[in-house]
Length: 152
Image (cartoon, rainbow, N blue to C red; front, side):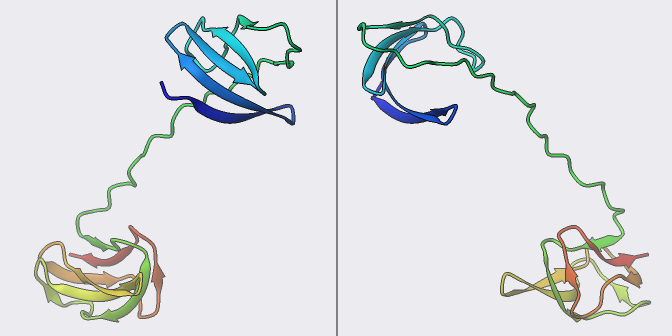
């Protein structure tokens, strides 16, 4: 392993730690230029014990720190919108609406234009149908996933 230098802050005290060697059971490290051989009982983050100095110089006080482990946040998709809704694919500003309530539309037909990231995006119908409701007006700001048009 290539030497790795890190800085740890424990109780507002900074420690320069250099990891010289590292195996599954022990590591050779320097803490503030003092060399130690550290024996690892568990490779988990919770605890590292049996720290033994290589020389008899003054040892820094090392206080075990409990690391709170929180479960990862899982991505949960938004509720599935009824297939008859045309939704905003990304946040943006409505520039132009090309249909009105009662219009017949085909799948892939350009129904409105929105500006996002300084670019105009043509929003298309996802299926054939009749426009039942238009949920936005020109100038509206929308977020990703917002319902723009409902088809019947």
